[in-house]
Image 1 (cartoon, rainbow, N blue to C red):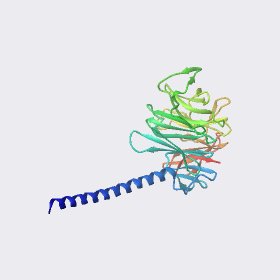
Image 2 (image 1 turned 135 degrees about the vertical axis):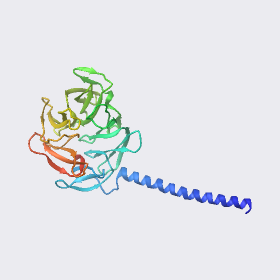
Image 3 (image 1 turned 90 degrees about the vertical axis):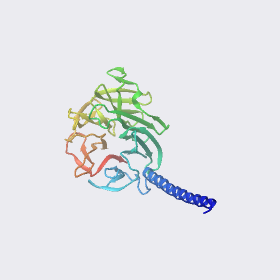
Image 4 (image 1 turned 90 degrees about the horizontal axis):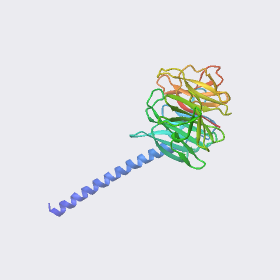
Length: 328
């Protein structure tokens, strides 16, 4: 074979390989983009248009609507590790692949059309939307993955959709503790809940081995501790009470129980749920608390409810769900 014909054949073979490889790469990239787009924005067949109780399906991570006692209706939308919704806003937290750990906070409307997307360090942990939908907050574990043991570190953000302003971390907010300005390297915030005025908020702060309920003011950018041993607060619809988990034991496997705090006198009472609850509870209505517990029969979690006044007995609301949220 003549040299120039050999070179020509070699070039044609190389070109064919390149075209095939490019086509394969293009198909892979297209498939990944299509999968990512579907995962982020949903398939268009599911939304939160109808009022009701929505939650994260524990088996698939998809969003779902409760349909009858213990049951679920349609599922769809983006996959989430934590979820909350109110008014016309939906907040979906999900862990991104790879290391170091990162969380994507996806904000959509009730038709699951994307409004904002933020990536922060850490593992998804808590998510909350204000009643108006104007304010959103999320917490990630920057170090560790549980509040039960020492050595964890959190990162809590607040997003104001009215202005677009994002507070990447709350650790710099001026904190008053015991009547004095408190400075410490170990300050961690988590579990924000918003008042109806879209200015006042409550959260947990931990420092020097103790947890505190703090009341914050966004306009003055300040926070003050109200009392100890309050974690993952959830403000009632009328703004007078806070559901929270209280540490009642040093057993790292079962340290918390659900309580409700009266903000007028800072007295609390236990709820009728006898099991340990590691969740930021929600108010299903003015008199009922909703929360997730580990499921049975291989289920990751179930959603339960209990009266807020401490009476009654727990009731199974959704089998195989977590992150409940009531949408009016």
